[in-house]
Image 1: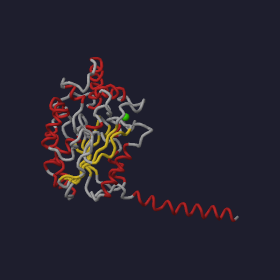
Image 2: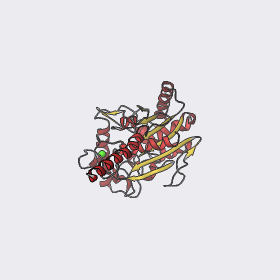
Image 3: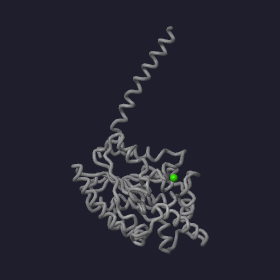
Image 4: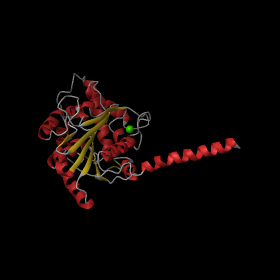
Length: 310
Ligand code: CA
C-alpha cells in the first residue's frame, strides 16, 4: 500500500514537472517582428500543389510566430527579385503595423533578402540565409560555360547538366521557363555574386570560408546549410542532387551550393546532413532521418530570434 502511494505521488510529481515544459512551448517561436519566408530559384510559394516551405509556416505559427510567404520571380536577377520583395515587405508592414521584418531566404532567397536589407536596413530586423548562394554556385558557373573549380572531366560535366535539368524540371513543375533564367544564372554564378557582394557587402564573410559580421547597420545576419547531396532513398530528387553535387569537385556542398558559399553573418552550422531541398523539408518531408528535422531547425531559429528581441 505504501508502495502504491509512493508510486502515485511519484506520478503526480512527474506530471507537475512536465507542466512548465508544455507551458514553455507556447510562445516558443513568438518573435517580436513578423517572419517573411523568401523562396529560391524556380521556387514559388508552392511547388505544384505542395507548399515550398513544407510544413514550416504552420510549425512556426503554432507557437506564436507571425509568418508570411512571399512570391517573387522564380528565375530572375537578385536585384529584380529584391525589388519585388521590398514591395511585399512594405505591404506586410502596412498590414501588420510592425516596424520591421525578419527575412529568411532559401537558396537564391539568401541574396534576395540581403538586397532588401542593404537598400532598406531600417525595415529589416534580421536576415537569415539557408543554403544561400552568397558567393555563387559552381552549378551556375557550369551553365554559363565558365571554368568550373578544379578540372572536371567531360563526363562529370554531362552528369551535372543532366542532374540540373532534372532538378529544374522538378522545381518548376514541368512548366516552361518563362522568366529570365539567364539573368538568374548570372546572379548565381561566382562572378555575378562577387559583383553583387561588392555593392551589397553586409554580413558577407571577407574570408573564403569564415563568418561575416553578426550585425551591420542594425540588421542581424545568420546562416545555415546542409552538406550532404544524397540523404533519402525514397526521395525522387536525390539522385539528381547527387549528380549536381559533382560540380564542386569534392568541396563540401548540399548538391547545389558549396557550404562556404552559404556563409553569412553568424554561421549556425554549415554541415547538416541535409541536401539543398531537405533544407526546406522537401520533397514533402522526405529528409534525412538521422539528422535534426529541418522544421525543428526553423523552430529553434525563431526561438533564437525571439530571445534576441528580434
Ligand atoms: Ca529530400
